[in-house]
Amino acid sequence: MGLLDSVLGAVLNGGQQQQAPAGGLASIISMVANNPQILSTITGMLSNDGGHGGLGGLVGKFQQAGLGDAMGSWIGTGENQAVTGDQIGGALGGDVLAGLAKQMGVNSGDAGGILAQVLPGLINHMTPTGQAPAGGLGNMGDLAGMLGGLLNQKA
Image 1 (cartoon, rainbow, N blue to C red):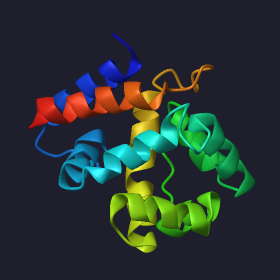
Image 2: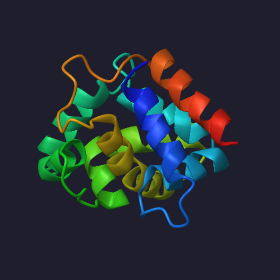
Image 3: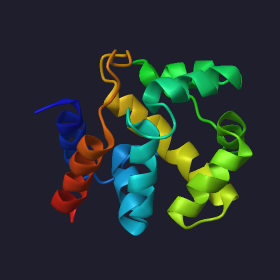
Image 4: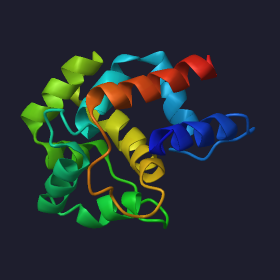
């Protein structure tokens, strides 16, 4: 069907392994399953019609915060550079992070940490060619439906 379907298939296959790599999609699914609000929050961040400008908007924010290389590694085909929750907060801004934290039902520090764990692997798997899609990753409904379907299959 599409890019996210192939991502979701890779997650399901990887989830059957004994040990998933840290920050891998299997660990992301586990985290989202424990806090479903993470799914809607991240979908809103990455979707074209979300309030953050989609993947392109996030790339711009990370570049302005001096984290362009990290974001580039997530989109690229090499190893993902790790970031901290504080770096995520710096890139997004305190007010934005506080809003995301509220959506997830956690405090700002935890929200930054969650995003630092989830975004690198998720963005990496959503950009398998090593390039961000010119048209973005899709609208919120499309992303939520595909990611929600993954959770239902995994359960």
